[in-house]
Image (tube, rainbow, N blue to C red; front, side):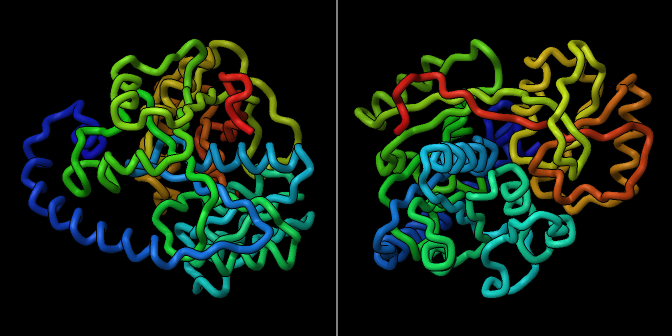
Length: 349
């Protein structure tokens, strides 16, 4: 209901009642952003790229950060991804760099580092550092002095007020870049839409082969952010493998009957991606973003998927760290493994 109303696809009557709160949010968040700009500092010898959202979640921000880190590592640069550690229960000073040595039980460290940090650690090459800490300056210094990182990538770094960046990549939903156009809580905007002018690059993650940026989005950007470079990336399915597996993923058979279980920011985008991959989606169990789901609710979702004719249940890499290892259930579970394909040659450097 919230997603539909924020996107403008559903009834907006109840969100309009929140507009006075949105006005208060605009004032408070504006003061917080001004303070953050005044307190950010650079780390000598490091190039910093912040990746942020104009709206709340689901635009591919973490996917972009992962792609940047992979590209940096492939070019021979020592890179680190710094994120705040959403869902972590340990004190910020007790988090830090996520261990990367073979055999470390990542599945037992979710309370310390958070699910997003563990998902990145699983998917990135070992030479890329992953650090979980709301204090990005502290995390950056640890990555710089302890691991020799020279490229620091801030996953969701637009809001933080400690580490200054050299580039700001802003991820937008190509179809609904502004949602219903209102600030939180009446809409999904985390900051005024005019803030898009702060970006040094605007990035879209497309979910379907042949998908293009709608002309309405292009026209708005031409007015709101003229001259800012744009980059389109397409998410590609690499295969699926069991939770925690390290072996090469296997591609699902075309037309395979699947169920989805997800706790992410934009489940509709995931649905489009699976359908575009040629799979027969029978059921999608949608949980809130970063859901602390129970075994009983997951088993119920798997049973519903089986009743709808699914042969296997698919989950995302983001949800993998929170998936109970000994859950069992009516369907086998596989994790969707994805990659990124740049669609504009020479647009990124």
